[in-house]
Image 1 (cartoon, rainbow, N blue to C red):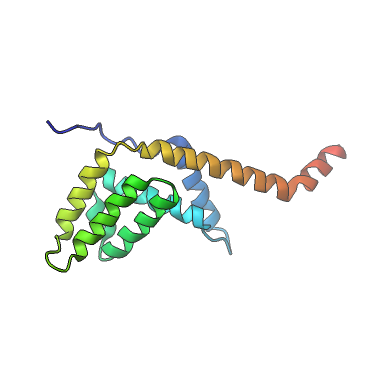
Image 2: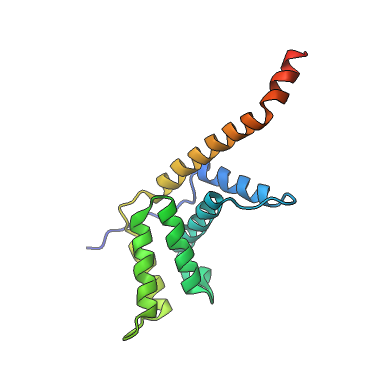
Length: 154
């Protein structure tokens, strides 16, 4: 009997808040994605597509490139089981003897990720929490004198 998973309810609140902050920062003039922002965003987008069964559409005409980007992103986040699934998927698409169709590979990836033992959403949330804490420390370090100075003069 195949293991059934409940429908995916979306990213956890901590993850969603960090993703929104990333998008808001990138709309500011001159702002760019940091490497960790890029990894989290790419992994979350890929995961959402896989959990909603829209991975084929997400990959579009750049399947190998997007699979590789997602593989690297999951590895950066320490989600190595998912990274291995994506590495295998790329190999299946490019097999010199008998490559599999993109449709077959994406279906297999979606099924494998839905059944993974890795707690991906929790790992995203943990990483997001760390990112928020790092951003708070950076903000405090950058603005400490202004904040402390203004409260002293009141």
